[in-house]
Image 1 (cartoon, rainbow, N blue to C red):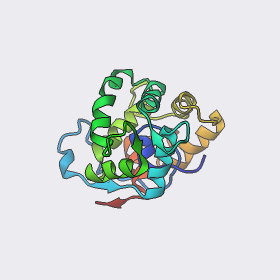
Image 2 (image 1 turned 45 degrees about the vertical axis):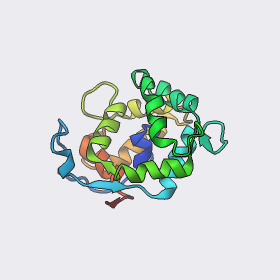
Image 3 (image 1 turned 30 degrees about the vertical axis):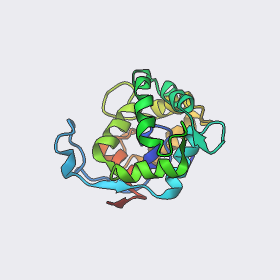
Image 4 (image 1 turned 120 degrees about the vertical axis):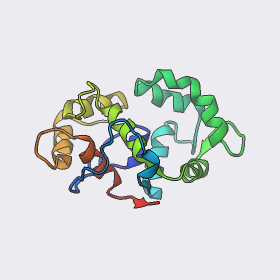
Length: 185
């Protein structure tokens, strides 16, 4: 496992890209003033990786059932009720599916990825809610998503991101990792 995109974390799909010294500018805790913080635009390759994760049958479009399957894997059953509304917004041609062009268009309309999105993604990985992501938490979430990754691989991922050497990923390290390949909007 060597790649990571923010979109994967926005949709909580996997953990992969690393390495850049973190700053403390992103840790807000409560998400207040998030509109004052920067937004980031992922690149098209990252968007395609996320799209492909949703498109489990590889037919070039995301069905409501495929979307719900990802939510179930992430233990986000409470958001399944929102899927019809998500499709109303994202299914621009009204065919009942989200194709890649529609997926990209929705990302553009949202104005990029906000710090609050990254904080939400962080909390998805922080299974015990202690404000840190351990290798075991990464392993558990990736396993739920059907990723083939060993605990040893997850430990390597955490070490690659862990700038302060405490053995876990904190919010600042996470956001630094997520925004490494993105450009500011």
